[in-house]
Length: 261
Image (cartoon, rainbow, N blue to C red):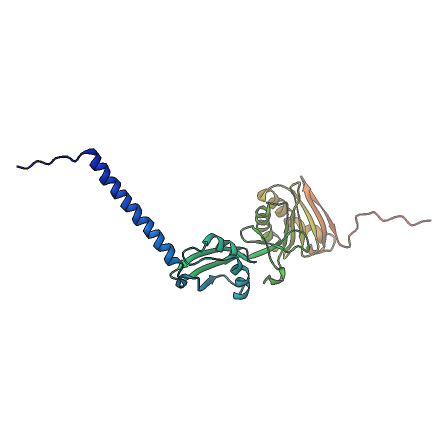
């Protein structure tokens, strides 16, 4: 029968220390080797493959914007910096960047989808389908007729949501919204393609939409009394509790003056 003798505590500590030191050496040696290998020219970035939505950009514009901000090899290149460089390119909303061994990068782009102009007339800002405002060359907008939305800073999404709710209501009357504006005080106003300017008052989507429905429901009946079409509306004010005020082209609300004797 054999019996084992426990190793002294100091021997155990020496063994553990030796193992730890060996592992640390292996890790440091591995890092040093990796750094040394990373400097090989074979790992220099040789190409960037761009896929996704590239309607408004080409290889020349992408290279001009991204190349000056990119440095390093396959292992050392700063991917967040490369992504930021792509997202700084006009029309690019989001970029996904990943490495492709041994010396390439794969980039997938998502472009802004412009749904309206944003701001006052003449500004070059647009708003995308997420309600985000972005800068771009408005001459590159593919759609011929985009509405103009306007409102306080940070409320672009709220204005877009209101436009999406109101546009179908006016389209039922064969009218379209040229401009929708939210004032600093919280009041809404629309300008139609017919030239009409309509004050909608304050409120959220439900409240404002109900005012518009009530107005459009009786509009034809009101205008026909004066021998006019709905497109003859010059202006309207829906901010009244029990009705609305309206002005028609060619219809005067001023009583005629009596002829001088």
